[in-house]
Length: 603
Ligand code: ADP
Image (cartoon, rainbow, N blue to C red; front, side):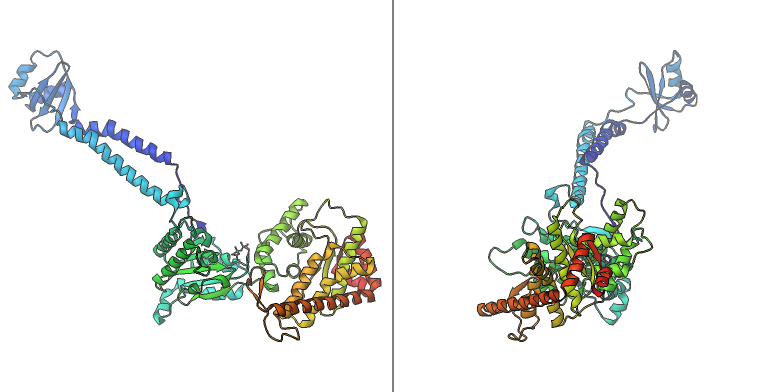
């Protein structure tokens, strides 16, 4: 899609044009209009006109002769010759001798033309320019003119617009939106039955899952204009400006219907109105205006509003009621197949080697969003360029996953030998505990190359397929795996380090969720002690229980993690020789693949 922008000319351009026009009027047009038209002819012609008695009036001046024809319709001019007989001949031809053939213009008319006309023209140009400026400042020339205009980005239909085929995965969302495309193509079919399209559709999902892309794809498929604006752009410094922007946006959209209006991050204006003292008046007015506008147009007028948010729970209920955003399309993180497809879509843009295995990459990048996958592919291409290769290989892609997950390799982070050994044992501890518990996913790769994210090493686990449910045992095993690193340090070195802080956080989070949200503790049965308040943005939770229960929850969390920690210690003690062997291998090589790991383990 192409964005339309009005080309902006500097203001001086308009002033120069105005000045030129004025000069033209004053020095050419007005004298021209005031002057009677005089035609210059040669003396011969004058003489022949006398012969033919075709002269009306004549005036002989010192250096020229002015005369008219018989009908007095034209004035001629010619030079003076030494012609003593002239007066007689003229007399005989019946010409009248006049004293002033060209009459001076009336002073009133000349005043009108030289003073009033330019003023009027100047005023007209001024008016025109002000209008233009008001129109143009949508692009942001001047702060004062700019307020209250929607300055939405407008994209027109074009052959290279985004299509559904560019959005990989997300089949459910696409299916849902296909209906809209169908409607925009053929509204008559729907009107006939009396069905009306939803006015608004809310795309909800985590960041980077392709919500904006989907909205653009709807416009691209339906071949209609696409207005795009972010929720935060509506909110201005002055109360009422946002509302006027909303009005302007809808006015523009109705003129261009059928079209798609896309409001990104709608939670910026659509947050629940709480009516507290000192609330955000400007935001509330903007929201009210949006509600009014959405009520104001008919469902079948061809304007479809798509909005995106990753905080649907914070939206005002009035916005979500039928007749406004009555349809909600979830745009979730891609599953394994979706990730593979997204990788393939983006891989088309870069040159790839023969050895690339998309399924494997998709497996490794579990939990990555579409935007992250796009980033992974691009990082791989950059990596290939850095290495002076003409194309990206599987190794580049794998490295870029690590870059996206853990940051770049730290080139000059020097670990002491002791530290390196501790990190080796720590990472092998995780992997060994994972591998020894049958339900845990196998290890893909372990490395102890320090990364810019601060990780001194990490174990990359790989899910074989898509997991939608997790059993209690699986979660417990996961907790045990998190504690495996610290357990190995304890067994081998008899002391502990700070390296386990992230593991501790993750293990606690899981244990807590088991007890407060998944109903996996004996005491609380199926009562939710915590609710998730921010599903798509990190999943923050808020407690919903009494202080006594909180204390109990804490106790149980501690007991749960402790028991899994003990289980991990047990597993590692039972496999002490493998632990040493693997840790030393990792210490030597710094990186160990899943196959190498399993090979040593099963030896
Ligand atoms: P959102 O609006 O959900 O935050 P965007 O639509 O802006 O995400 O996506 C950001 C980028 O991520 C896109 O430009 C695209 O390159 C990539 N992307 C995300 N999801 C997909 C997908 N399903 N297929 C292809 N590319 C995707």
